[in-house]
Length: 134
Image 1 (tube, helix red, strand yellow):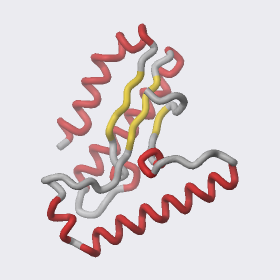
Image 2 (tube, helix red, strand yellow):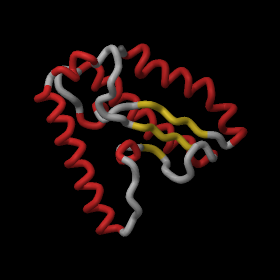
Image 3 (tube, one colour):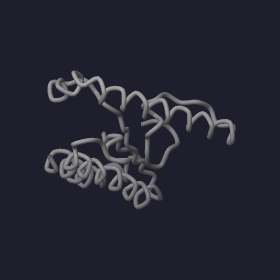
Image 4 (cartoon, helix red, strand yellow):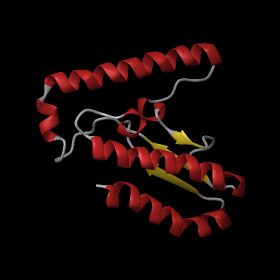
């Protein structure tokens, strides 16, 4: 799992950065909410996606001054062939639904405190330098 989920992001970013520094481009990594706080029975996946989250943050800090934006999107449970069995577990699905509702409520409360506009559920967990979309 790590060679795909983390190493691929590392090597792809390393190869692209010289060009992106010249063109002021951006990197958008695909992480996961599992990398932000973990999920049930997915410890190795959680660790790999957590690595993507922190690599994204570090790259944003290191290369933002060069005009390179580095962000990640962190989707939640997504229906694929690999997750088909998870969609048969109603208790697990409810746990995911509860977490999304909690995140939306927390985000709404922050919006009310800061006056910021609301964003999509997917963007709730975006990381990195922020600013304009890539």
